[in-house]
Every structure is written in structure tokens, then in C-alpha cells.
Image (tube, rainbow, N blue to C red):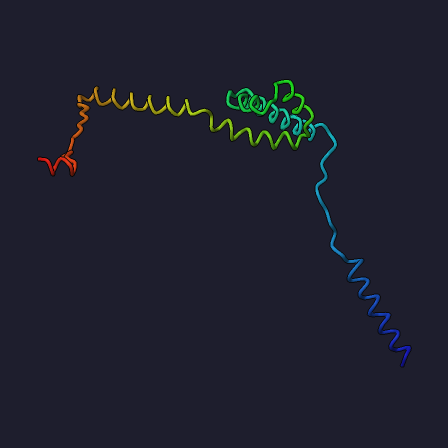
Length: 147
């Protein structure tokens, strides 16, 4: 009886081993090549990030803020050269927000151009531009008591 039990336990252990370890699924993943193609893509991204940061550093508002913090242009260049590529990428992403906002001068010029174009189009269509300001009864309560 014990030998029969040993055979069943042994068979169960061998079966579990075969199912669990030998027939386990294979794991695969893409391995980047060590050729120059992967390196050039990273170098191109790094160069693009550096140019974005330098463009943001040329902005007048950014230069004024850096001067307010007591940083000179040489100190900024030294800090930039000591950054890792991931830090430069993070700074470039933040610089995109600065460059997108601008100083507002472009928006003011665009609004003025649109207003001038609307006025010109209305004049060409022989429409008059009339601005009326109506003043309602401007009596104050004190005036009502007197008069």
C-alpha cells in the first residue's frame, strides 16, 4: 500500500514539474540594436531639445527672470551642459509652454489687423459705421430732491 502511495505521489510531483516548469510560456522582447540608427535618433532628439531650450533662453522674459534670480548667461550655459539628456528633455517640454505663450504682442497685433480688415470691408460695401452712445437719465437721488 505504501509503495502504491509513493508511486502516486511521485507521479503527481513529476506531473506538476512538467506542467509548471518545463511547459512554461516563453518570454520574448524586442532588443534595440547597437548600431548607429538608435544612437542617431537619440542624438537628434537631444539636439532638438537643446535648440528648444536655447530658443526659450533667448526670450526677453526668461532672460529677465534669470537675471532676477542672479544667474548670468555663463552660469546658465554651465548648468545646461551639466544636465543629463532626460533633464534636458524635461526642460525642453517646459520651454515649449513658455514659447507658446509668448509676450502677448502677437495676439494684440492679430486683433488690430482683424479690426482694420472688418472696417475696410464694411467701407468697401458702402456700410456706415455708427457708434451711438446714449445717456439715460443721470439724475442722482440728491438731484431729484432739489429739482
